[in-house]
Length: 144
Image (cartoon, rainbow, N blue to C red; front, side, top):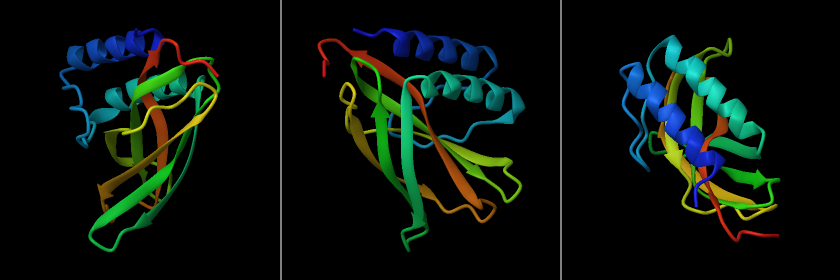
């Protein structure tokens, strides 16, 4: 059953559609557009940060992609699935120069962690990356 994650996802989808943006297709990288969508995304990420912590590293894979791997940790009393990550590409000044939405293949167990491994195209303007939980679905019965 979907709880906070689905409510947040529905709210963000409504905001995105209301501003003329399209929703991300699961598993597909999508660049966001404009300052308004950046503010919406930052709001959504702050909600995700209340429930999740992300540890990650990024390095070139040698084939024109940057490989970003890490773990999403849940301090909630429930498991989460359909976890969608927002990956921001940042220039040397910290300004966002691109972004992608990628769905994790693993669930995040209650009070546990889930692994992710995604690749994004190399962006010559990107000096660094930021990874945050963007949306998720709570899983009933996901206890410690």
